[in-house]
Length: 338
Image 1 (cartoon, rainbow, N blue to C red):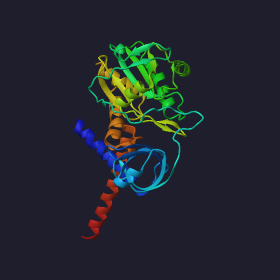
Image 2: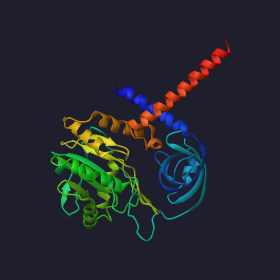
Image 3: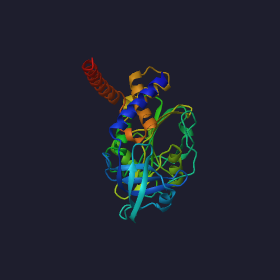
Image 4: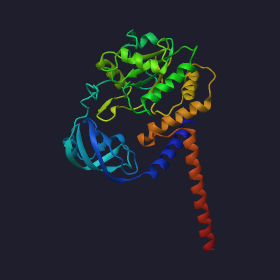
């Protein structure tokens, strides 16, 4: 069954990717380089039908990669038919600071030498301060299911951190009376000290007994986030750019779900938690969450807006329509040759 669903997701990815396949030019700002894989993280302008954003690119030429530095502004030929997207014929125009002078975001180190966790492993332990300055660790939360995400208080994009935190507010309501604890780990720990997080949490009605906003030593906090493949990139216009990842830990501290997209709904998370606890749950919500996450995991960020059943049915409808048109054309051709 899982193999069949995986094949369906691959088919959906192929349809989505075919609609936007292009090779062309890209202008962007280098945020970070990854020498081990010859890849580069770039904030790019709108290109090839893609909206402006941040993406990881593979650089074809070793010589081009060797010239790239964080802060460099570049033009390059871009191929978005492959994953990750690739760059060739790189032209460097200059450089600029990655953080603004008025309100700098402190990210001491971009890429971190840490173990990257996977589903089934126990979550790494770490010690944090919550929004009231109280110390707690991940081990302290054992005995409860934990739903965890990563955000920061200065995020100015209403579609990202504030949206996730708003959904956590709904989860706090939905999980009332259940042994579930919510954790949001800041990606701006140098600024997001307990008093800042307390004010941020108050805005969303966070109850510290059931919802911890976590900060602490900046290096330790960012190392913890990196173990979940959440890496923060400083950006002068946005603040911090980071991938979305929501984590569900069972009562023993084991990782049950890694949701690699931000389009989940509270109903989907509730269904996943109830299922893990062997409680009655909505199978459609669980499947919807799986489809959304699997699409991003298999196909990459190019389908990050994929939202489970809704988009799956849309793709099937498109496939059926074009299949019908092809069948009618084929019949017409066959009749004409008889």
